[in-house]
Image 1: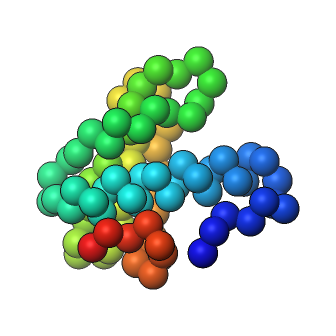
Image 2: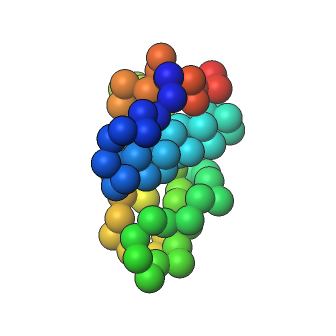
Length: 84
């Protein structure tokens, strides 16, 4: 599944960010916290994204090392960015 070009720019950028987090988090599948190397998308923030895969509920938790930006990704298992 590709990210549709006809959706609003902000939604496309967020979908691209989420897909990168899924790709990096499942590529280095680990029970520990990983530094994905992905830059935070908030303006004027120079932090990088860390993530943690929680096997008990199949969620990926991510957060920025500098600001309070963060979230949880679920339902990623069937996506093309799943490397597991």
